[in-house]
Image 1 (spheres, rainbow, N blue to C red):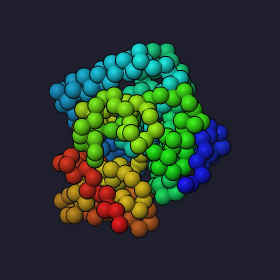
Image 2 (image 1 turned 45 degrees about the horizontal axis):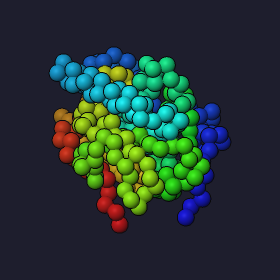
Image 3 (image 1 turned 30 degrees about the vertical axis):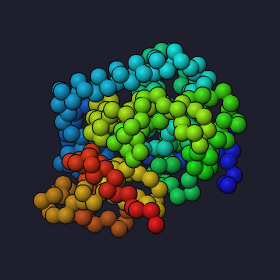
Image 4 (image 1 turned 60 degrees about the vertical axis):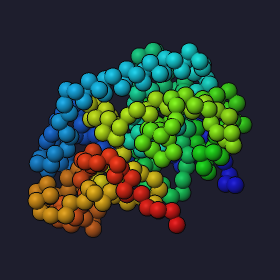
Length: 294
């Protein structure tokens, strides 16, 4: 079993909060519904943010209100000292983080009261590590960090933090093995006994992106480069359904726009690059960039 230890001070992620620059993709998301951007690294022609319809905006408001009601019900059942939330830097957890922090501000509860559980991986994307560090700093949350699997982390967390009784997670019912989850559901019998709190179960893939765009929520820059479901470096590639294959599919810029990785190997045009994650038409293809386990 890997060495597992909780920490809130000098860790691989926490060290980045002070030492590394923030690398988050939000410079073109200041205005909800904005469709063009000429900001830094923007070509001025690329459709950066989709136009979100009024019905979609109303749906997001209903989903947000429902999540806030869920948080209220949770706090009727548990004290804040009994709660923690999982965070992995992905889009779903990013929405969960922003919703939860918004709710805590509304209720005049410190963001430090409900800590963030982050599970370290030696195979994580550096962009994810940078983004997690920026979230810890920007939202001013308290970090609890472990090595190993989620199951191992929860086991050791219970030993280190016995008051924790429930954990918020960003699962949606279209995720693998999540189609039958309830909003509040105990862990399985072979897991550490804990209540799983699932406020995003009814959210769709596009709901997640609509919320991010409407609320100008910072997110990991990998999503600008065609990644739609992010695991580790060894099992995740850009979604092939977002690949730009023709000149007509190109944004037409000759520089580096927001949806293209700024690397020396990047071609001088956008042909062969990838469109951003929110342009995925079929949400059933969300995990098409996940490689099968060997």
